[in-house]
Image (cartoon, rainbow, N blue to C red; front, top):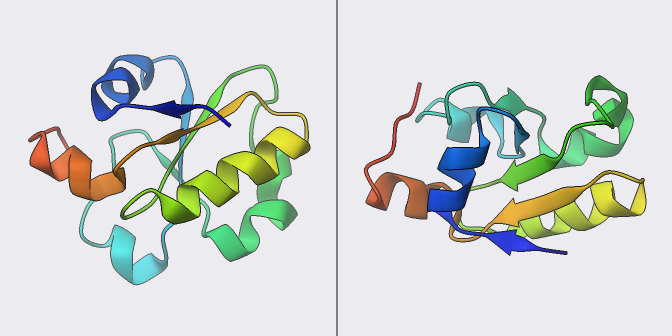
Length: 98
């Protein structure tokens, strides 16, 4: 499962799907603009909400849950990568949130 940097995710977010797998209380702190919120525990049941024709970048707080999410999506036939460092790294890079 590929891991990309926050800089790569920032460039790719205009064409790829960003899936934030954090819990509700975590996303209240801010999400990547345009991201789709699907908590990790709901991912398998809600994967049909994603476009199989577009790559997926999974995001969580630190990168651990999103790595599991990317593996799960990859096994289901998606082109999936995880964003290393998660939202901690995104905030540290002073990138935008909603």
